[in-house]
Amino acid sequence: MIYLFYRKDQQDTKKGVFIPKDAKLKIKLTRFNPFKDTGGNQSFILTLLDSSNSGIILTSLHNRDNTRIYAKPIANGEADKLTLSPEEKECLQKTINNS
Image (cartoon, rainbow, N blue to C red; front, top):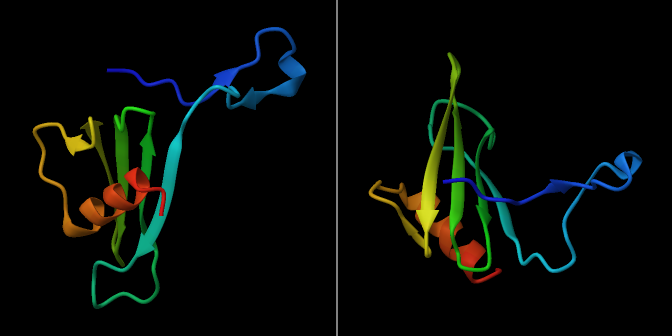
């Protein structure tokens, strides 16, 4: 499944990347600390949804040794056959509600 969130201006490449005026995008970035032994909110969840609340959730979990990145598809406001963490669920609901 491929979602169009940004597109390149075909007529004038000097303008670069833009969001079409008719696009109804919902984008939310939430930083958090999932591990008690690390300092700061260096992990994050990025939710990208279209007008039907379908899209993706990108989650980056950072600890002292490594960083892991997970991508999960979202269909109609729900995870598509995958389990979301409590932080991902909260971020998804905030994105859907535009809060």
